[in-house]
Every structure is written in structure tokens, then in C-alpha cells.
Length: 97
Figure 1 (tube, rainbow, N blue to C red):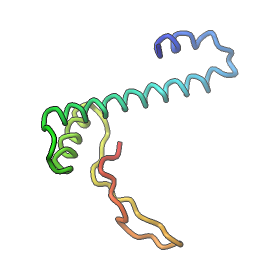
Figure 2 (figure 1 turned 180 degrees about the vertical axis):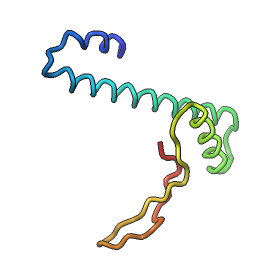
Figure 3 (figure 1 turned 120 degrees about the vertical axis):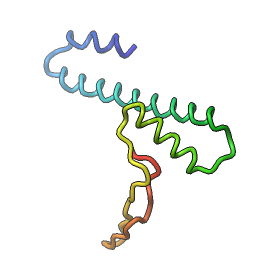
């Protein structure tokens, strides 16, 4: 269905063409990333099974996503800011795409 929409973009007026194309490409990119992440998570769970620690699944999913061509960072520090005070490593993002 997305392919059909992309093929019919050329018939739009020039005023809306750039905006519409950007929206569709962003949607396609987000869908491709979502498919890789969800597919990778299903693959990891099927391979490892239930009951392991979160770190085991995280490491395997990191490997699968990197192998799939995605740019992934694991355990990324995310500072917490409260009333102009920045607390380093307030949180850690498990996997950042």
C-alpha cells in the first residue's frame, strides 16, 4: 500500500509535493525500523526462550539490530534535570536507535 502511495506522488500539485513526500518517507523509515525491532525481539525470544535476565535479551537484541544495519547504542546515559541541577546518569536508556 505504501508503494502505491509513493508511485502516485508525482500527480500532486507542486505546493504540497515536498511536504507530502517527506511525510511518506518518514513513515516508511519508521515502519522499517519498527519491523526490524519487533522482528528482532521475536527472533531473540524464540531463540533464548523465557525466564532469562533482561541483560541476556538486551545483548542478543543489540547484536541482531546491529547485524540488521541499524545504528544502536546500548546503556546510553540520560541525565536528569531538576530545577537547573543536572544529575548525571539519572537514567540509562537500554537500547537507543
